[in-house]
Amino acid sequence: MQNLKFALSSIMGHKMRSFLTMIGIIIGVASVVVIMALGNGMQQGVNKQINEEQQYMSLNYSTKKSNYMLGMSLTGGMSDDTDIDNEVQETPPAIQENWAKELLKVEGVDGYYVVNNSSATFTYLNKSADNITILGVNSTFFSIRNYEVLAGRNLTASDYQTFSRVVMLDESLANQLFGDAATALNKVVGVGDNASYRVVGVYKDPNAGRSFSSGGGAIMANTQVAAEFGIDDIQTVFIYNKDVSKATETGVAAAKRLTELSGVRQGEYQILNTQSILEQSKQITGMITTVIGAIAGISLLVGGIGVMNIMLVSVTERTREIGLRKALGATRGNILTQFLIESMILTLFGGVIGLGLAYGINGILAAVIPEDVFGGPPVVSLSAGIASLLFSAVIGIAFGILPANKASKLDPIEALRYE
Image (cartoon, rainbow, N blue to C red):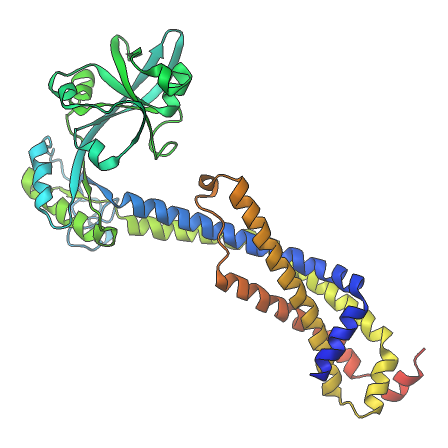
């Protein structure tokens, strides 16, 4: 306790010098904590996105049966690489919507929708947008995906029955061609070379920038897309499951059932292995965070050197004090402990200030920068905060050993003679 009082007295007796010494620690801790928080935010954003998408699982045909590729084995595990070249030439039959309806009987499947897609140039008067992704959807799509309609309406049953030449534009494409959503309604746009379609709705795509091209996207009836572009009515089946925790089991069971319904023998329908994607994203994010954090951590090293330097100065200034304490019975261990505690408190104070600064910076970043820039808001975990303070204390001890050892070895007689 006495050593602690000596340390605090010395630090408070030289406030400006102590603060300037702590700056390196403050900057180092703040930098590392902010970078770790951004990395955590990115990882949580990826996890959230993948978990949300697990509610809507696509069933895709693969000629490589139960390989580890994009899908997961229907037995629930991953096969090894030995069969990776075992490709077959079986062409799967065209998917029927009544097969997709049968998937509703699979435990955990709460809904389904089917899609096909193509792309074309959209034109209106003298404006055009190239390579626009057209998503063809069936009628159950809108009840499951719940896209926000900004203007107009969704596709209706009559649009499917009469093969109406109607289209929905996403917000980005509507703004590009018409300036805003309301103006786009009931306008006739050119799609491809000769086709004309009436705009009946404008929607906001929750996956804008991920699933569609940068120029925007459009939605039509899947039957109309098939007739217009000469493709299958159904290219992919999606199942909807409310319980994300059982998404993999549900998806595997649904894929197995679709394989049975389709009658394929050599290939099979599979689901996307989201677990491997999560693992890869964790590795990439962790690597980036570690490298950048290590670079920022160099400032901690510089700060530690600054602490060691000022502690050496302090030992020189307090030589007579050390001699007096030794003459009064202080042991070498007492002196060593006193200076180590002083060094540790100095860096610990810097760590506390740096941690507070990091919280402030992260708060500003979360308020100013859109969340989707980093994938998620910066998150300072409790473990990161505690670790930063412990590391600050360790820096103080590590870089305080040399000055403390020098002070503890001073001869009391020589120290008392020091001018």
